[in-house]
Image 1: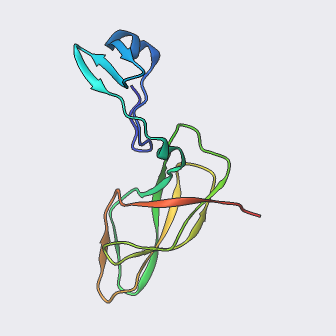
Image 2: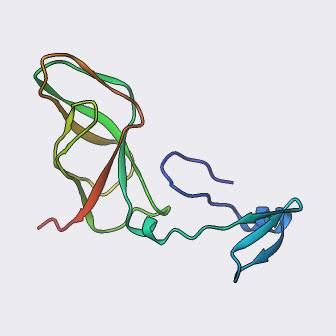
Length: 137
């Protein structure tokens, strides 16, 4: 089994499936695992869902902006070809994530975060922002 915070799904190998899954019912969407019937959920909306995630807790001082280390969460193992960008978004904390074109990779990314308030705000590790496909010309 492959485990990473960069994927929103479970990926298991054929050897694991052959040794653990005793019955797979495609029409009714369930598998039998150790004698238990487990439903299999199809989530086609994940095919287009990409996110960028803050990699560490960071305190953003009042009335300032800061680059925050981040990584991508992908709907599949491969990084797709189209460019991706964040859209300016206000988080529940009051911080603003700037709209930024992202490089075509999954690691070593940067979120530009602004604090427009008069008090410091802690950006929590794991905060996610959606990205969208863009054409870089």
